[in-house]
Length: 255
Image 1 (cartoon, one colour):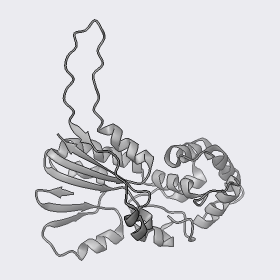
Image 2 (image 1 turned 45 degrees about the horizontal axis):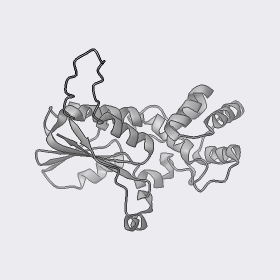
Image 3 (image 1 turned 30 degrees about the horizontal axis):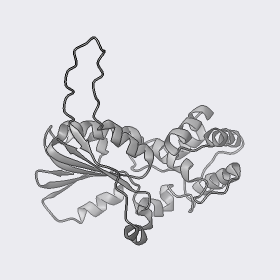
Image 4 (image 1 turned 180 degrees about the vertical axis):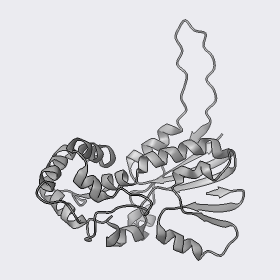
């Protein structure tokens, strides 16, 4: 986040804290906190520009012990930081069937959400789920469909988002930024699926007033923010970094 010429970074990951310590600059400030708490650190109308990266970092995915990957075995964790008490193990083994199905549908847009939730609840009565590969292999058997992506992709995405309250925290951050941004300031949001992008677009969309025919029509207030069209990575960028293929970016300008 850029404020009066000073770059401030928010992150919960311990690895990011180590990297931040290596930056020797008085213009850089690292805060180990969730970006939903941004209003605790800045005053209204104090920010010139903000970049929000909603993606999971490569080190998190590549470290099996963090529990994000369905290709390498690790504990069912998925927490971005150790300040979060709830783990993926807790969600998978103790959420009700109804709540599990809701998580898979809302955060993973998984078409077979009810089927997977039911199967998980039946299986955990016999044996609790302990590892990422155990869960991923089980989901693959349950879905029995051919897909380009790993069959567990959407379920794992949903579980990660639930564990870290990603949508709720993103919404809190964006609402705070409406007051924190200076006029002319820009918010750049890089999201990785339609759920996040839809939230960004709708929060800053201009809402027109609706008038009854019998009520004198007043001019609608001018929009406070301008939202750009969707920006996606070029072919060249995807070739250099295959993980960027699902990235989508919007730029919001405060008018």
